[in-house]
Amino acid sequence: MTSTKEDDVLNEELQELYLISKHWISDLEFLTGEIDFLKKLVFGKTFYPLIQANDLEKVAETLIKAEWILDEQSRLKSGIFNHLQTLKPYVLRSIKNYNVSLIELHSQLDNQLRELMLDFISVKNVVFDMTIQRLKKNNATPELY
Image 1 (cartoon, rainbow, N blue to C red):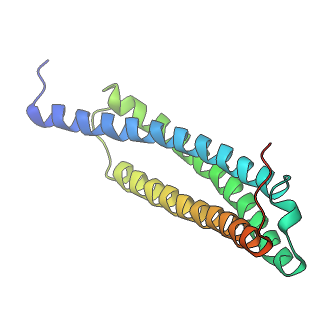
Image 2 (tube, rainbow, N blue to C red):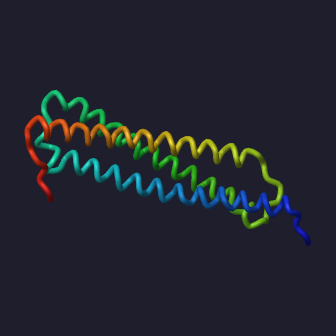
């Protein structure tokens, strides 16, 4: 059986989608570790003493958003695993006719991951900005663990 150049190009593109999707799993696992770090930071020796009464609402909102990110991360990770399982037979060439919905789903997952990362960056910035503001206001230096 001979394959056409178009089949080879399509297979390469499907392999690329598969590899990108696998990389997303690593990105999401990294995100979990970063959220855990931020939560420890908020309740740790450095940040917790700096929290003042007028910061409590902002801190609570930030922690709620961090938990929401973890929930979304878990849901997105499940969707990516399903996407990988769908892509696998195409990459192995056991299914030859593909549907455009594969690419559409890949694009949707990509957008969801990007939005989740932007949400994480905003949470991280709030925590770091609050820490810096309090340290400057108190002329303090953070305690190192």
